Image (tube, rainbow, N blue to C red; front, side, top):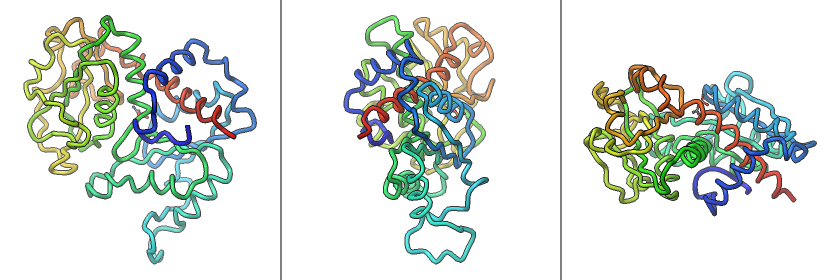
Length: 316
Ligand code: CP
């Protein structure tokens, strides 16, 4: 595995899941794999889970991990080509990425969507610049349009908790006061479409995801209907794709409640976290046995450890 940017870098999803289960069953079984190697975890945005789970995953493999909050600790990076750098930016991505890649075997990057310009975000300017100019193996720790490590952890969690071969999995939009990227929802849809699950997406009109992501899947606009007999409810907010980056509704009636969960088939609740209590989901759901959010967050370690392991094993 040379890069882990999105689902397109996964050739066999079932094999990847099997590998993760193997890693989780024996997390210290590969503790010399990363010996004398190092990874740089670059953050342009805040993180709790990704930051800590990635460091723990590296540690389990004997891989040294260095965290760089590049905006605070590095020089301000210029990503535009051919620009006259007489403004705020002190260093171009061409040099920065090349230098970082000369120090580390693996470089992982978090760079959220800015939600100002659709074309800029969906061109994955920052992630692709690292791919182009950094000689190390590249991992996406949430980019403008994708969060594959989260989707991988979601897949592991669903597999471990499903009671039927092909569970009904519902991705439900939920309200949020701020404009959030579509990355988590995009990756969840893409990964579920390739896994053995009946995926249902539900959201208010106007929150349609990219047609490329939805890929012909029909949307259920009635949330309570979507919840009927569901095995898993995944709540997530995202801002509008068509009215790009805008909050067009904060409709509180889309919050996930215990009453709505009663429509499911003993459904389990998922959210990538951080979650706003009593905005996205009621306390009574999050604090119940139906909630899998902590298990889901714990699986972030094994998702990252599996990706790191595969990268280290493929090294020449
Ligand atoms: N789910 C997730 O990526 O969490 P963090 O933003 O805290 O890393």
